[in-house]
Length: 64
Image (cartoon, rainbow, N blue to C red; front, top):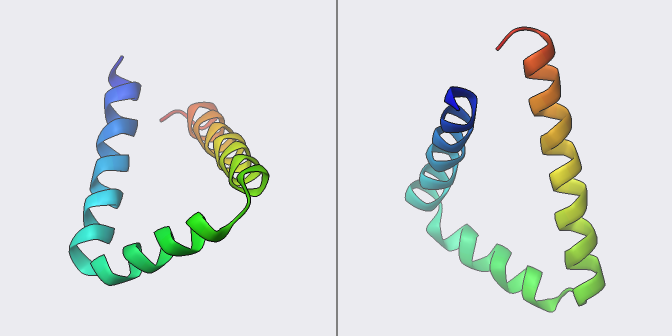
């Protein structure tokens, strides 16, 4: 459970930093995502999930 809370906290820190430091860039990114076809957005989401799982697995393997 501690690992889940740690991961959630890190995500919130990263998300908050992006919104605090570059809100205009976030708006442009969302506009670009809106222009992508649905299949491309789905594939991007799946790839980021896989990458996240690999990062979590790697951190778990080294003892975090």
